[in-house]
Length: 177
Image 1 (cartoon, helix red, strand yellow):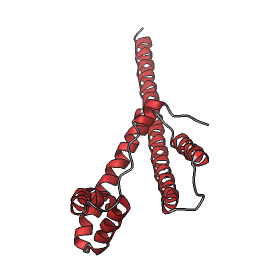
Image 2 (cartoon, helix red, strand yellow; image 1 turned 180 degrees about the vertical axis):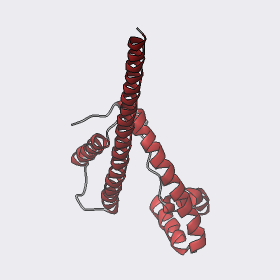
Image 3 (cartoon, helix red, strand yellow; image 1 turned 180 degrees about the horizontal axis):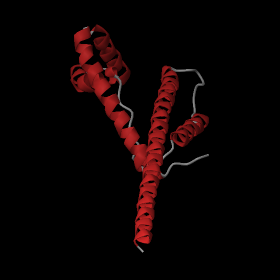
């Protein structure tokens, strides 16, 4: 298994919350105060119903916040990869293996839960994001290689011109003698 340093893992950007979770975080305390006699599960049901009853314009606010958070996460993730000089494939494989290890040690039901489905979707999103970054890095590497090649060619041309000028100088010097 390829390992990522503890420091890199601790500084890995956190995935952004979805629109519902942003809404939930905003209204939770208020709902909790109004429903002190209810359990966490019941509070979640109340908030879920509130979310479902929310009109599209109000939901749009949370969707926009989610989009901003996702865009920021993408930037932070790219910067994180660059800072720790990580390869996307290495990160992908390491995280996949860590998830598999956690599943092996996980106790309880083997039923496929909504959370497990979300994890699979999250993995698919990670793979897509990693592939996008990989493609972007390949293009960047190709561009850098092209620039280096052009630089090298330019230097060689300049050397040739300089050598040609020196030859002409030598020839003029020899003619005068």
